[in-house]
Length: 128
Image (cartoon, rainbow, N blue to C red):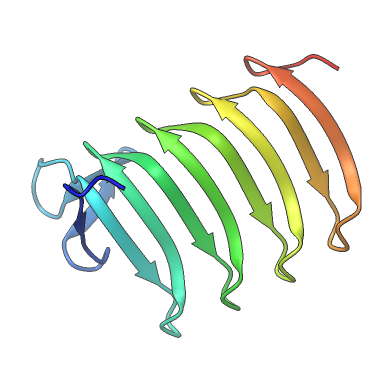
C-alpha cells in the first residue's frame, strides 16, 4: 500500500458524489484509505482511494464478520482478481478483470462450494 495514503473512517469527513470520493463539503478529491462499520461496530468495508477513485483493494464484510467480497481496482475500474464469499465463508465466485472488463476464468459456486458455472472471458466477451 502506498505510504502517502491517509487512513480515515468514512464518518469523519468523506463523502461519495457521482462515483467519486471527496473530503466532505469540498471539491477536493480524497486519496487514502478508509473503513466503515456496521451499527454493531463490526467492519463493513475497507477502501483504498486515489484521486477520488477506488484504487487498490476493496474489502466488504457480511454483518456476521465474514468476508463478503474482495477486489482490486485501478483508477476506478475493477482490475485483477475478484472474489466473493457466501455468509458461511465458502467461495461464491472468482473472476478476473482487466481495466473493468471480465478477462480470464470466471467461476461461480453454491453455498456448499460446488462449482455451478465456469466460463472464460476475453475483453468482456465470453469465449467458451
